[in-house]
Amino acid sequence: MSSFPNDRRWKKPLTPFVFNRDIDRPSPADVATLAQADVTQISDLVGRMYVCQPHLRSLVSPAVPLCGPAFTVKCPPGDNLGVMAAFRAIERGDVLVVDGQGFTHWCMGGFELLKYACEQRGMAGLVVHGAWRDVAEAQAAGFPVYGLAVSPYSGPKFGPAELNVPVGCAGVIVQPGDVVCASTEGVAVVPRGSVPAVAQAVRSRKGGHGIEHFLDEMDEHVAAWLEDGK
Image (cartoon, rainbow, N blue to C red; front, side, top):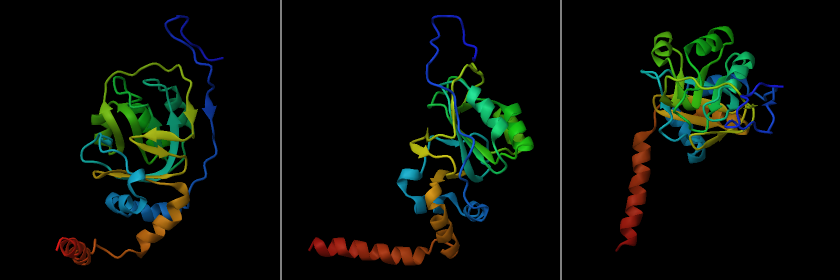
């Protein structure tokens, strides 16, 4: 039985601690392909439903790009017991996606946790729908950290939490095994079932954005509007 304050101002929830340990991760080759693409290109390929809102941003400067399968954790606002459990189970190449429900008054963790996860577990980076701290140390170490805010205070560790369940992150539902791609441009998510198709599209697309062809196409749309207005 987990400990909880013997204080009636704290209400212990009846919902359980959920820990799903198995993730259907995508092909490493497909993840490697997505990692080579610009986040802007990934965003165009997955569409608006899978591009995170822009207030989710790199907390270190310059931004350190990341790409990898999502290991998800959902926590009560400001409570990071689930984050502790995730860092013990995350696998090499995974991106930890923490749904802190947008709470930013307290942080969900700091540098020592991040260092352990990156150096000992091989975590590819962190995306938190909430706050983090010790970002100067993370920046000096070159660790990718994306979040909503920086906050110095670390809150309680009471739980419960849910690991490897669908979570909310800046307007996008992230499933375990989805591929998370982030850079200074923002954060995009490739749904697990669409990873092969998106990776193939990246491989098939030639370099550059084909701006001349794009402008030719836009000329046709403008001409159509002008023709309709006659």
